[in-house]
Image 1 (spheres, rainbow, N blue to C red):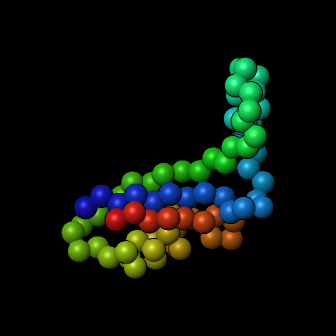
Image 2: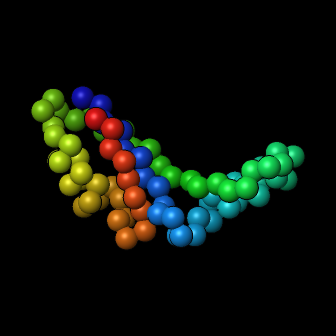
Length: 75
């Protein structure tokens, strides 16, 4: 079974990579991009029967730094 976990920095946490992308887009002539938040997508291939609670535990323990990041699980 394929599971997708999207991890993003929480609102209020500075995102220097996102800011660099926003700046580069402006320099390339793409005006009107007021903000960019960059995150990561993690795809897990897990055994059938793996529960969302188990994936949440994976996120809490390893996949996301819950102090500064939020995550979303798609089973």
